[in-house]
Image 1 (cartoon, helix red, strand yellow):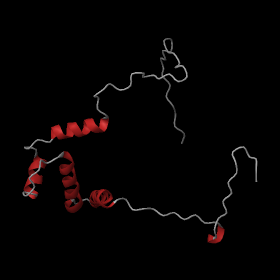
Image 2 (tube, one colour):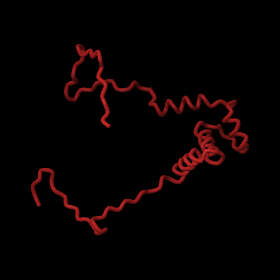
Image 3 (cartoon, rainbow, N blue to C red):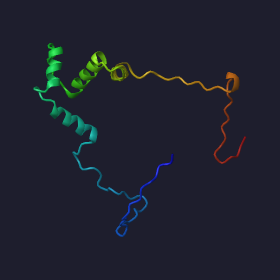
Image 4 (tube, rainbow, N blue to C red):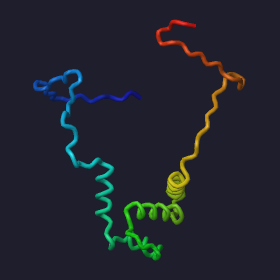
Length: 134
C-alpha cells in the first residue's frame, strides 16, 4: 500500500527564499541555556515527583531503608518491577521483564550467519564504484 502525501490546499510561496549554499536556516543556533527534550522531560518528571505522591509512598513502603530522594527513574523502575512481578496481564509482565533485563543485563547479541547454497562459504567480490578493475 503506497502512502499518499497530502498537499497543502493553500500554499503561500510568495515570500519563500532558497538558502544559499553553505548558509544555515538558523544561523544563531539554539539559544544558550535552552534544554533539549530529554532534559526537559527529566526536569518535568522530577517536578512531578512529590513526596506525597502515591508512587513515592509505595517505593518508601517497599524500601524503608532507602535514605536517598526517590527520583523519577527510581519510581519508574519500581513501577516496571511491580508490573513484571504482579501484573495479571502476561503480555505486560513479559514486556516489563524484557525491559528490565535489557537495561540491567544488556540486550542479547544477535549472531547472523550468511552462507551460500548448501551452507558453503560465500565468495565476496568488491568492485570499484566506477566499474573498472578486476
